[in-house]
Length: 357
Image (cartoon, rainbow, N blue to C red; front, side):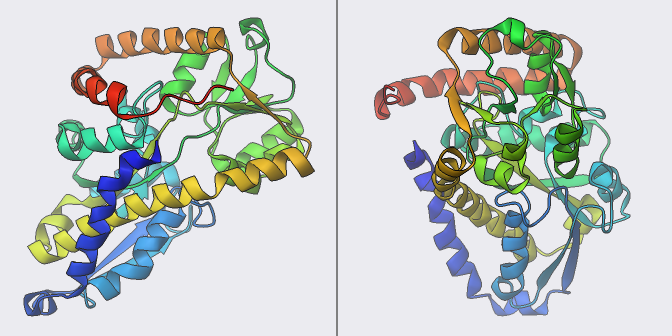
């Protein structure tokens, strides 16, 4: 399925052309974007993507745009980034829309959708459907003074780590589990007690028994956080996060004060970073999974069809409820669903089916 993203790689070529900066760009007033982030730059694809941008944007812009990335909590606490960028306490921030669910119900739709599109289809909607416009509209309508730029996307996540195998829905009831976003709401429908812990707090919570299970990200990231030391049953597929999109938020007044050349540099850097982050995160998972099985005693499970059907039904119930409560979610989900219905003809004919196991 990776081939679905190949069109995006052309943006890397565009970026190469941008490096030959025009003389006009050299006359622009230099901009320094100070970017607090939600995820450590040590986590591949999560925080490393914006670090990738930081390391290249000054060269690409001939010094017209610079970026300084701040690790989580060093400048602004992760869950305060949106508010801080909007109010101008910082001029930019790097995060994920699902972190604002408490402020904007349904905001997670612009980060990941349970049983939703894979990367190629998701980016097609964001970049060439109405996704990008609806994304910005969400922040505008909620009164946030930010300009949003999609900036990074990662491979599918695992479905979670459990102490014991899950053989039926009954095994989920009463389970205390860290779970993200819209998928977490679906798990609550199935009787799971869900909490949203930051990455650095998950391992201690597992170790102390404060939670029984967790999902967080892809195998390469989960391994760095050490989940395998406490829980040995790793489930796939990540039905809740088949693709996860990240965002660069820039204070709108700052954005509007930038020249068109500077704005284009930032936009193209983020497009290039999006292609790079997907390719990178696709490349590094299998080795970690092999190590987990061979050296760490991890058992990899693939959910049976009946469990996936239960997860899907729970998600559809959540989506219906959210649509009745949030006009923003209703509009965005209807638009995405229409896009996907049209895309189905292409998808059904263009790609090989999933290999039988």
